[in-house]
Length: 394
Image (cartoon, rainbow, N blue to C red; front, side):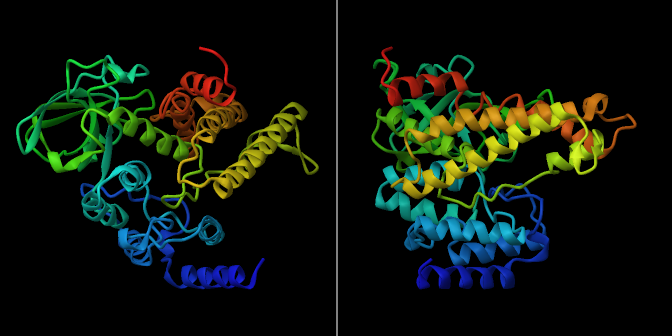
């Protein structure tokens, strides 16, 4: 390690120790900018301090609210945060999805308008892509955007809008030309959700939560100045945004902090529910499965670090699909094994004699069923890998 690198690490460690409040350490809520969610004092203070430092989006240019850190410096900040258990000060689609997209495709005026607000967490962002007839066949989207001079008038709907009931803004793929082929005539616009023309209806999921929503646009307005990229060329912009999204799911984005919050150690769960013999988990089959999972997870983390260090952009094009597929597999396997360790107590639900932790673990298992679907299904990612990485024919 060079003297400069060692000095940066020491300065980072000292700053974090002094400035990270106790209430922002350990598992807990990570803000994503929504004005409809009240933050606890320590969480708010942590966000303000990190935003002032430029470390909510550490690799962004300073003029847009970042700190201009290199990839190696970014990794140091993440490592030092993890050492003291500091939660990321800010997450979400603002800093991770639409922010990098505007940084790449936006005009100077759009960058100056939007990026500093993303870095401060001023407003929570939702994603308007999927529709009832446009899921994996996203180019079939039908949300109409009619040119009304200074603005577009939007009519149609989106579905699976994550956090829709708490959203302040939504970035949408819309159809701006009905007569062009379906991959053309699409544009990306930013839309204020706090207007009479937008209605949101929650969808209850199998785990009991309602984080996903249907979003209805009924003569809603979107300013023309908030068109990202060229009119009718939103498909290319939208695909790039998906790469940023998959980078987040693959753990290799460098826009915002991505210290992962760890739940209960799966080895500790095995000790509690399976038991130990000497210093070993009692069941040899469980030991073997745990070992393979931990080896895979460690290899995956090493790959993430290598990809972050090697890539020249914030969203590595080819690695995103590979890491998205494998990350989904490991997440589901961890949840499967965790529930298996609990035996019958892995079917915990409210109104029973199960513990809070057991109920949470069962809900987590139900939630992880979707990780191979959201952010691009594993089937779609494998097709991308086959075509773009392996060069196989259609």
